[in-house]
Image (tube, rainbow, N blue to C red):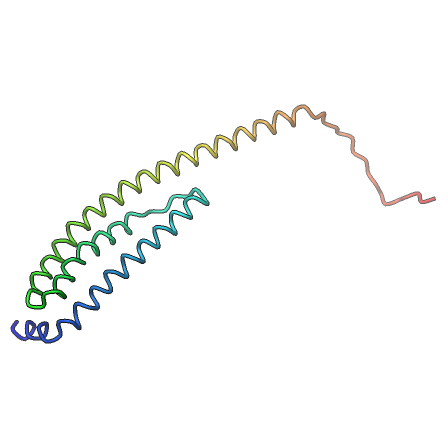
Length: 151
């Protein structure tokens, strides 16, 4: 155990700088994915789950203060690590809850849009059928055997 602690103390910045950068980059990527999903939802009106993105944002936002504490106070890296774990768990749960709520809302909106589209299709189908009934049917069949009179 002492060897692990010595290794972390010796390579403190080599460990926590990449972890902090990873947290920041993952937050940025998740936000970009949410924007992409939002644009798809607006264009196509389709449901896309966002719960995973919100959970991941919550986890990384929770760990970020712990990593920053570990970088700011190298002697307190263990407190920063504990803070990162606790913050990641708490904010991850909060993000999961927020994502589930938004997924439910988006799913309901998508189902409502689907129902409206289906009703509109049925109404259009009825209108076409009513219009087709007004056209008189002709059963006259003429056969053309290829003989033409050109002259």
